[in-house]
Length: 96
Image (cartoon, rainbow, N blue to C red):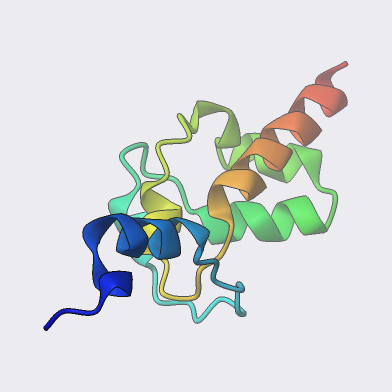
């Protein structure tokens, strides 16, 4: 017999509430390989952490369409879409 807590509905609830703690980047390059805009999210992240708005602009963060491919493919569960949003925000502030 199948236990009631394995129903599809319960499984969906558990999957929706599952969170993965990000771990350090393992430099596998998957994020860059799957990016439809040919960006390098981890390189942009380094510029962002350094507060280098010019570097963020040079690396093209503004063209990111936030599709999520980078974050989905990341085995380290890095929050790359959020990183790209912050990078775009930094770039906007630098321009103002």
